Image (cartoon, rainbow, N blue to C red; front, side):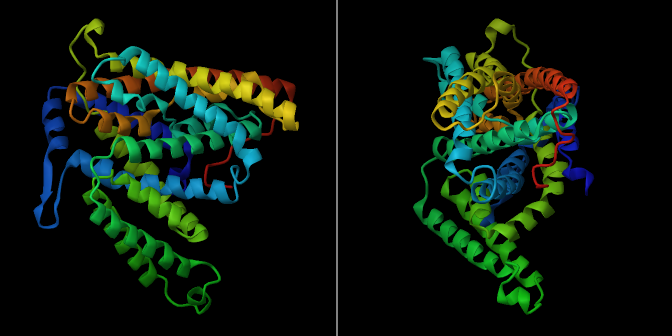
Length: 401
């Protein structure tokens, strides 16, 4: 299990799974696999009718978003975003890394039916970005990693808001109300698991509380799904309301399953698309918007907005900030969209399967380009710091601090 907490291994597994999914879908038996992914598992008695692919993206992926929310909460309470001064620069840079890719996408798709996919190239895959940094950035100073982590956390928060507000059908208020009750009860019960709670101090068994939390989590997911809001938002809400220390322990326990099973399974499923047999000129404008928006838009947005904001903040408060070259490295890493971009692609083009398939390829290609660029940039910058002898060795895990 310890290996599955490694950012390096997590990034490698994601890449292998995505490549395998794309390969299998384009072999002779590919159509049968795609049909299997789209086959529905109907639980009519409880009102659930999802395809195998949607059980993965709507169900299992909620666990990943729960872990993301726990990390977000930790950073907001005691981490790198627990004050305005700490959060300001990465927040501004993250906004730049959202706005510029979105504008690039809209420049390609303006006036077309696929313009609503503009959030797709705005996401950063925190696991992949930190994995690349861990593999190639041994000599980079900790401040680069801290800035990247803060920026990626804010980026994840923005992506969650996009999913909640832009990819939600007409909400069923009754189901949302039941979901809110289950989530509130989940948060209240989780307090019993705090280290100094009377239950823990009395050394009572913890498994009944864990069982109740699991039941409440499933109920919350079910009612969020029934409400019309994307079901992964349940994972986000549960992560935010859970007591911080029990939440950290839960995320730590779930992280190997998320890294080793859930995310690779999602990557395999999402990348299982047939390569369109069309000329480049026949591809939908959304394809080009994603392909350019991810690697190019992120670099431009994060770097330029980060530099401008750093100059203003440094002049007003004297707060130190990353230089242009370090921001360029972070911008290159931010272009690796992958997991959340694949999810938003599925949500944006759910009714346009051909465009969704092209969007998946664009996410994989755009993220692949960003991986190559960022690996080169991180390696060169790390070697520079090594020669200057002013960096510290090693990069820790997102949950290791």
